[in-house]
Length: 241
Ligand code: SAM
Image (cartoon, rainbow, N blue to C red; front, side):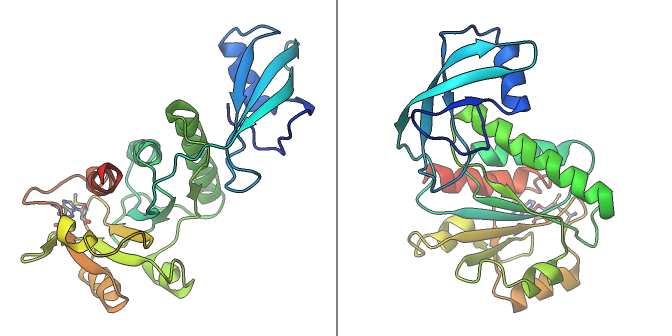
């Protein structure tokens, strides 16, 4: 259960509302044991064994009894800068990318993104995607929740100076592009960021901006993958490595 508060062996605490609701859904009872994680890398990282000491209609009190330092992150951090896709496809991408170990996702407001998010709507969607990532962690046993950043366009991302030390690759359909496998061979455990386009692809201006800022084009093969399939295929390849 994702419990984004300070966790300490010996402490007794009321679970945050969302975690308490999950425990109720599973019809757990006092005396039963659950595993908690707070999603942070260094607090210390890992999982906490807790027993349920009391339950009410809307609260669950637990006592934390032990801590296991366990790390399930990939040796190589892989970040996504992925074109925002329409409908629930972006949610699906966030869920699956989390399972595949993504370190962070920046939803890209690409020139050809069908969905445009502004102000409150952007904040609400970001919060929703972040919650989906947390719940995917609960499902797959990840105890560090990937950060889902605020949506931004490529120029803003570059200006922010994000991931300056990372290998930068753009998933590209251009002819003569080197295969992904070839591009990732030499880089050891250097962080990596994949840029991928929305349904309509990246515009020529975005492709040029990416290349001028160190993004090397890579191909995933001769078929045109959907906007959510392409970054997942790239992540899957890295996860398998
Ligand atoms: N008609 C669009 C175009 O020609 O750019 C198709 C875009 S595709 C649905 C969405 C994104 O997925 C692309 O911008 C690219 O980043 C990525 N992509 C899809 N298939 C790919 C492949 N075989 N190799 C590399 N990237 C791919």
